[in-house]
Length: 222
Ligand code: PGA
Image (cartoon, rainbow, N blue to C red; front, side):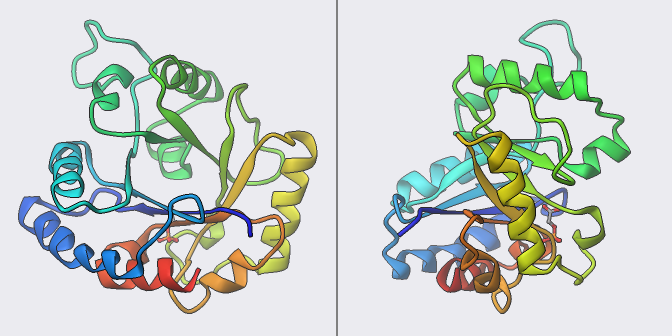
């Protein structure tokens, strides 16, 4: 059986009270008795919540990893407002790089994304590199990729599982050492139609991860 990675991208939504409520509800993930070598769960909260998620998972013995939603393209230094890989590494194992929302709204360019991947690898963070199509350039050193077509993000209009599989397969034919996830309007109802595809290694979930119980349903049904 292939290993699946199920990623929650909580985006820029929850304040402290809402995040605590999410964590309380997420405790039920323990009922699934997950083995991370079969199903690995990765939760990406906002920077302000990396610490609380990290300590909540360890004190409640929850088998899930933390990811950051972004990382500075620079190392530590005089970069006001940036959070760098060395800082993130204290709390997280993964980091999302190249999301279409960041490319579009924050002007992130290919060069900047290469820098982000390089600093992440230097500090032993695992980049989850998001591509919008099979021809999106992927920096060297990336091993985990998420294919997220822009039309499918937050629209309730996912890609078809066969096409998502076609794109994953095309990426792997050029980068055989990678695993590829699918993202875009994944729910507990449609998740299996993606994870049962031979070349899809998991899912990246935005909107449906905002409700912890729905996200647990996705993990369960994947
Ligand atoms: P969505 O978002 O699940 O709400 O479509 C996915 C993402 O942006 O990562």
